[in-house]
Image 1 (cartoon, rainbow, N blue to C red):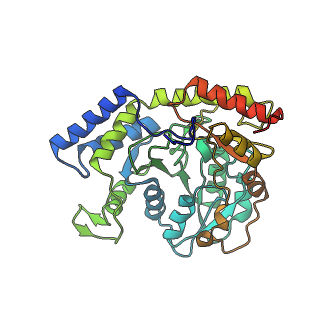
Image 2: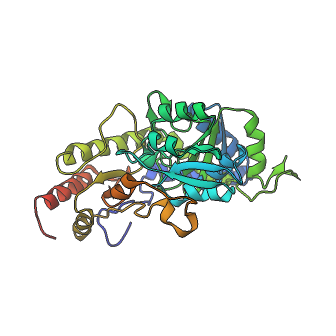
Image 3: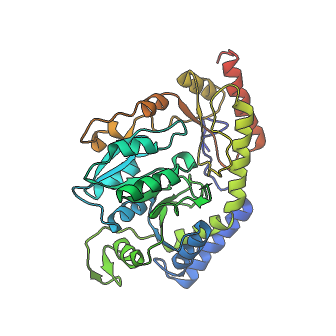
Length: 369
C-alpha cells in the first residue's frame, strides 16, 4: 500500500489469508511436477479461459501486449496495412500495431469513451485491413455496429479486451465478438495474476498451431523455426496463479459491480458517471467526467485519496506512435481533459467507497482543501 494515501488507487497486496494459501498451494503444485514452462497448468488454464469467455479456443502468452501483437500477426497484419483503432488508450494498443509494421489510424470516441463506429467508417481506405476496438475501462464497445461495418468492408476485427475480461454486452462476451480477442492479465486487471500474462481467444481452429509457434520464437513443435519471432511464452507458475484468481473471478466481479453502483448512486448528481445499463462492465476502472478535474484531483489527494488521470496524452500525440495523416478526434481531446479515475479494486471496503463519494460531493459543495 502507498505510504502517502489512506485510500490508494490500487492496493496490490494480497491480504486475504485464504487466497494466500491457494496461491502457495498452486506454486507448490508446479514445483512438485517440475514443468516450469508450458506445462499442464498452462494447458488447463487455456481450457478454463476459453470456457469462461465462451470461446472455442485460447492460447496463453506472456503479456497482454504480446497477446495483441500476436493476434495481429497471425491474421496477416503487416507492412503496408492500416489498422484503425481508438485515439484514447494505453500505448500498448498502438505499439502492438506498429511492431507488426502496420500503420495505426486513430478514430474519435463517443461519450462512453469507446471508439465511435461512425468515426471508423470515415477513416477506411484501400489500405485498411483491420479494426482494433478497445473496451475502454472494461465497458464493451458497440460490437454489433463495428462487426457489421467490418463485414461490409471485409475487414478483420481484433478486440483489445485488455481491460474487459468477463464484460458482456448484447449477448456477447468480450473477446468473442470479433475475429480474435486479446486479453491482459496482471495484478491491476479484472482477472488478476502475480505478474504479466495475456491470452488470445479465437474461433478458427487453424490459428491455434500458428499462434503456439509464434509464442515459442516462431518454432514449430518447439524445434523448427518457421517464422522468426521473439519469446512470448507464459511461465507455468503464472498460469497456476491465474487459475486461482479465475476460480475467484465471479466474486471479485460482483464486488466491482457493487462498488461501481455505489459510486453511480452517490455521484450521479454532481459529476457525469457511466450509465447504469443492462450490460455487464468489467469495471477495470471507475471513471468520471468532472468539471474542474485537476482541482478535484488535488482536493482528493489532500484527503488521503489517490485518484488517477488516465491517458491524458492521446495515442497520436506520443512521438513514437504518431499517425501518417492528421488526426481529428475532438471528443477524445475534450474528454482527456475531464476524466478522472477513482480508487477501484475488490479489497476496498464499503467505508472507503463512501469516503470517496463524500469527498467528491464536498468538493462540489465548495469545501476548500
